[in-house]
Length: 74
Image (tube, rainbow, N blue to C red; front, side):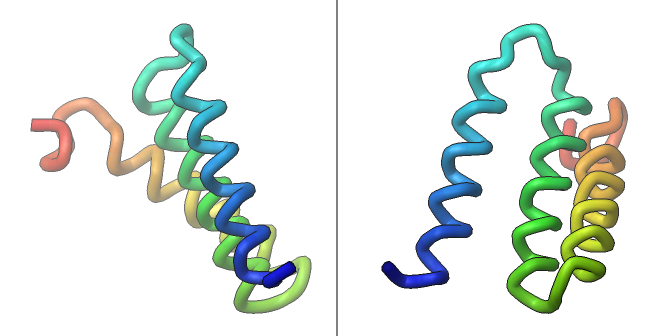
């Protein structure tokens, strides 16, 4: 199995799972989704440290981009 297909399938499954969480607000979904994407990108770039840093950076970006009043939310 292609090793690039596995992270893409994990990303798709994670995003579908998050979409089903009706009780989560938009900012929480953005934070968790950003962490998932960042973690996958970090894993593709480097080892464990890069995965952790990528997840943290993705969570921060996802939270900031989904804050009320952000340009993307207008």
